[in-house]
Amino acid sequence: MTYELIQVRTEGERVGVITLNRPKQLNALNDALMDELGAALQAFDADPAIGCMVVTGSEKAFAAGADIGAMASYSFADVYKGDYITRNWEQIRQIRKPVIAAVSGFALGGGCELAMMCDFIIAADNARFGQPEIKLGIIPGAGGTQRLPRAVGKAKAMDMALTGRMMDATEAERAGLVSRVVPLEKLMDEALGAALMICDYSQVATMAAKESVNKAFEGSLADGIHFERRLFHALFATDDQKEGMDAFVNKRKAVFKNR
Ligand code: DAK
Image (tube, rainbow, N blue to C red; front, side, top):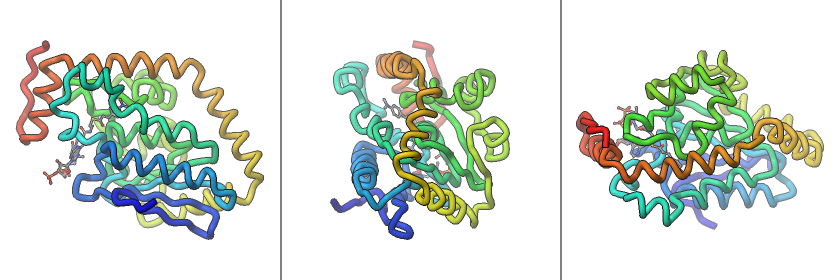
């Protein structure tokens, strides 16, 4: 498969490295990109030579969220009937080998959610995490309201989901969202070092460790995600979603009418 919105390579013939590559849009995630990401992860997962994967972005942005322009005009019926972007967003959850997120720059909205769907996050010192969907008149739609509180606790998760503020790398490490923070120029060395260490272990054991930790982490998550998805879809019935996204696309301040 040829990829246009991601770059795919191997490191030491054992680590699969996927780089999100829509730099002009700060790696905003659209349907085509998520299809490519899912296909690349599945190909690495099926390759017996690969023991671990690293997903990364650019220095400025891991990913600034789902593509706002692409979803700005959707109605409730569109997103509900189409089960908006559920199909390809869920693929990363099926990957059985370890996946590390190497995050520099913005990891916002769907970008933060994508990083949290990886098994652990190594952050550069310029990383900034956030769930700013509230500013668009919606809520997180890919697990943000479920995984963030599990990672950082209710207080910080509520703060971030309700104010839309960003968390810097230091705060993210202190809160437990990321496992390590390193200087930007060392990010890939650190992530690849961790990945190669994982590759030295038994694939059976690393897959079992991942599955087992996820069992602890994900109890009743499916119900939470399903609930969140339906609420997310429902918000496309509001005028405020149209206003929030139109304001972003047209670079103006949103004026919400609470309906
Ligand atoms: N979508 C589309 N374009 C984006 C974008 C985004 N999320 N983020 C940035 N861009 C574009 C900008 O429009 C701009 O394009 P041009 O004007 O150059 O054409 C370019 O990237 C550079 O951005 P800025 O000029 O704004 O750069 P700054 O450094 O000034 O600001 C920023 C960087 C990241 C703070 C800012 O761009 C920003 O606030 N971006 C939006 C962040 C955001 O609101 N993200 C959340 C989006 S909602 C679901 C799965 C996922 C989701 C929902 C459901 N299901 C499975 C159901 C996810 C939803 C979201 O992520």
